[in-house]
Image 1 (tube, protein in one colour):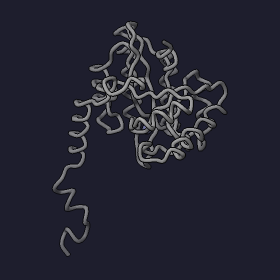
Image 2 (cartoon, protein in one colour):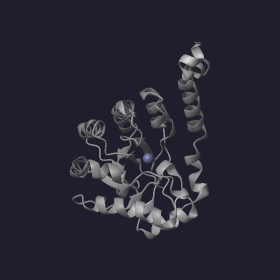
Image 3 (cartoon, protein in one colour):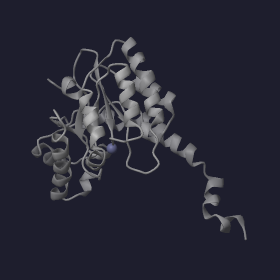
Image 4 (tube, helix red, strand yellow):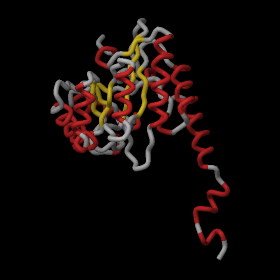
Length: 246
Ligand SMILES: [Zn+2]
């Protein structure tokens, strides 16, 4: 039996370095940074706040996650930073106490849909349902008044934006995304944020995930390094409601 027959994947593994490929694609997508072109595409979305004060918002997607959210909450508490968490409804339902803890510690919560689908591919009714199920859960957390929705993968269409608005939400994407979900390593996450952050920036990071084997350790380590570095540059951390108060 040849090598190839024993393990069909080994043929690919020997010829392609997938980690390298992923790293190159991550660098490339960070370099292109489509999110920075956002304001030219539509002003219906909050990409960042147009302010002169050095205020910025840390945002965390795809949680709550029982492995990584508690670690992140500890770091944020250590530095007395309040952030905004875009929760996936089904994760909120499965880990309700953790979502309540996020609220209890003074963080803001936002809607990241119920199952994290690509919204432009869904029918109107499905989109409304994805938003409403998560909205009900968010509102059952003490003191939560969800105002912001981040579409999964940042993907939208005019129809999606209309439905989000009709559901009572403001759509938020962000302007600084260090691609932490591509696992570039904590130093790169730190460097990419420091290179792009400006007054009013909305920084996109992840404390949860939608696959089975995600790891957010690097994101948490990066946040630990970033907070003091950003503070030493004069930045103040605020929640999205505070940043986008107009
Ligand atoms: Zn997401």
